[in-house]
Length: 186
Image (tube, rainbow, N blue to C red):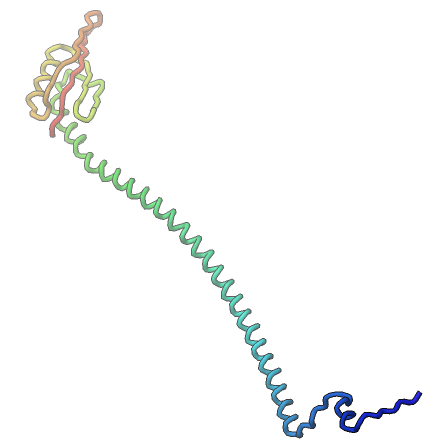
């Protein structure tokens, strides 16, 4: 089969094979090639800088995490130091109270020693803060009476009272047991 195109020449051109680009000059092609190479180099450089920035940030993150762990350990020790400081302050306060209260027992015993007669023995001595309870044994009631008078005359013992005074007649020598209460004022 033979085909014959009877259309006018002008119509044939319009129905042609399609669109054709005009030929570019050689300099313009080189310009596009250079631009393509520059674009590839720019994208490569930016990719390389992003990789470097990523590795720098990862290293900085690791360093910061280690520093955070170190600071947490230090902070934990700081909380423990506060507890230890409170304990030390409490101990120092107790020691200061003991040192301040140390003078009273010495003054008490110093004043008490001068009031005890030769034939009297003290078997118990209780310091209850405001009052004293003294128990002892003597060969006679005269020694107990002398002891009470010595306590009153010393000026340092107030409200001297005898609670109990017993004499055991079944034993030889006869012994008197007694209990006395009083207040010490330094």
